[in-house]
Amino acid sequence: MSGSTLGKNISITTWGESHGKALGVVIDGFPAGMELCEEDIQIFLDRRKPGTSKATTPRKEDDLVEILSGVFDGKTTGTPISLMVKNTSQKSSDYSEIANYYRPGHADFGFDQKYGFRDYRGGGRSSGRETIGRVASGAICSKLLSSMGISVCAYTKSIGDVEIDEKNISMPLRLSSPTAMPDKDADKKAMQLIEEARKNNDSLGGVIECRISGMPVGIGEPVFDKLDALLSKAVMSIGAVKAVEIGDGIKVSSSKGSENNDEFILKDGKVVKRTNHSGGILGGMSDGSEIILRAYVKPTPSIYKTQSTVNKNGEEIDINIKGRHDPVVVPRAVVVVECMCAFTILDLLISNMSSKAESIINFYKI
Image (cartoon, rainbow, N blue to C red; front, side, top):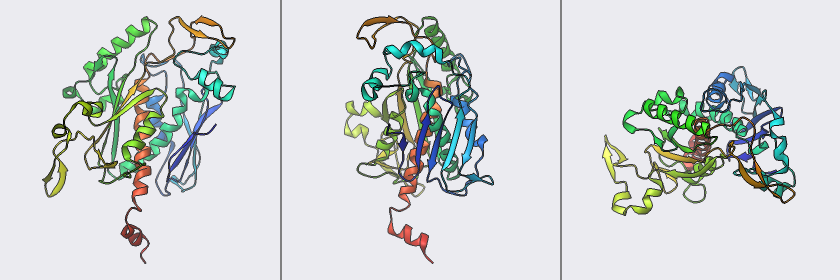
């Protein structure tokens, strides 16, 4: 199976399955000399681990990370950083039935047709637990970005038809509310909606918004490796994400040029934009404004309602999925979106260091 590696200057390769012994990631190309300990990574993993509230699956996992390589005396060495999280709460018997049929909304059918074989325990590589490696690597990238004054902040914008009120936002709440919403009133309403969906054996989707501030101008390439293209690729690679938009997103299709264009002005002697319809990206490159990205997440496909499908014998059957599943994956996916954005930004920042001849000359100047 190819396609488990992402990145150009820094690359990440995630490995492991939902019900295997462990999952993890290998990060290659990360710079040497940054202070790093397991707690730096654990803080991020704790935001995505299951069993923390009524908004998540009851599966209990500590998701404790171990640094296996690439760190010595508390600092990165420049060699591959290998991280591992052991699985401790698998119940593979819950999935024995699905070996012979295709779950609606899942990758089962595609896997069987492509490989002729699949790990049906919890979805294998298609499981949300694969994102452990993404979060662990993104945590390391976020730490380096933070030291450069670049902030990557994601939160739940909506769940179902409940959306946060921009006037009531308090960003610290996103780290303590069960829905990852930075609005306590919306959080309460969303939890009621989640409980209602759970009682009806159903699930919900939602929208995650990510804001990146402190970005220098010109990060990203003007053709294929556009900043918005690579951010979209990284975020769209998250299993539950079905759409990504930057800035005004789909609204630009119904606006006029005079409405959508961001005029440039001088402020304190610097060139800035009067508005930010572009979401911080123009021509594939950062424009100095806050980058605003939204990821649209589908409802959890594993629901307890009776559904119709087809088995491997070509028979139409009715099924009732067993197991422990999230009524909504949005709250736990917030940190995944954040980390994928952090990784993409750092990778492009390193590329930008060689965009000017003078930068290379000055770096190596004797």
